[in-house]
Length: 458
Image 1 (cartoon, helix red, strand yellow):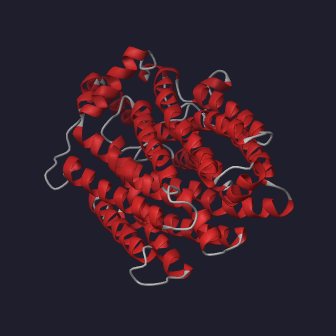
Image 2: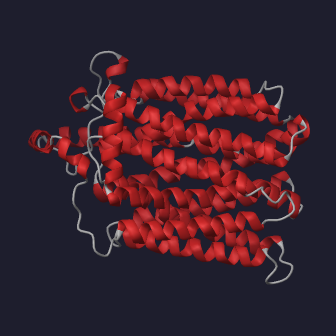
Image 3: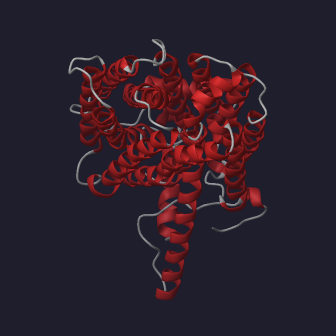
């Protein structure tokens, strides 16, 4: 990673498809340096995108205990998840455009510092109302990590390379859903739910330090624009939403995420309260499902991308999600009689694994529709997905803690909505790749000239 000026001005070069010509030793040293930089950036971006699942999943085994400790109902406790999700959604809508104007580093560091403070205060919350408010602030600040991580990927990669990187990113960030509930369950063995937030505070501080110390700026000043002003932000986002295909991928991603979060919000109560599993058993099952998601995402990035079109892989993933949600509804509603934990957990495993095809490919396809406003596009993607998750969260508990039917219904409805968005708006069978309306103001001639100069320099 090269440095120019103070730490805030560190830059990461855009990834090129071929190494520079020149002396063999110089070329080898440059390639090795680029690999080290790429690995470091991947790890840091993975940590940034892990902030939301860490904030959610480490807390899940403690949900029943939080209700008992604070004297709150299951629906009230689930509002702490909804508040965090709402913050994650709305924060991206602000921080994404800010990163288009001021670069990626400064908004990211500010958000992460506030996240650490809010998380520490969650450990001291005296009641459910205060905890809900602090979780909202935690989500608002933590949104900086995920929205800017997507924008950084768009700064550095294009096309299939971007899809591959998103799959790799899911490998790194996907470790969080595996480790988080396990760590949360173990923390509960030695302390109470407040200790979970203490651990989250330490993790947030470590990620913040890594960003400050090693993550360079990826958006040079000449490619920034005034989108952080209200008028410019609204014009940019209106242009993005006017692109039918971008909106289609955004909605597809949102509904798929809502189906995923219906599982996240309800699974602790379903597995522990209905089927009688311990917090440690729940953590194990949650981790197994996360392994499925990560494994399929790696198959997508390392095998399918370049051999199968992104839309075909996405369509197959949506079909599997819909089939698994249908099977889950039939089992939980009693159509097959009394069904134990193993069949229900198996259907959830299939559903979660198929998310490894849906999520990276929708993100890549949507972000390929814009070049100059990756922060705003990432903000729209993140806001819509987390708002969808926030809406799904309270719905799964609407019938109380004694049935899993609401979870299955929400998952099936969201899966069908994702399929309809993909078919009606994206229309992959008839689409020729054309730039969205927002590309008109992106100065393509100047950018192409810049890329040609980079190629000449290489």
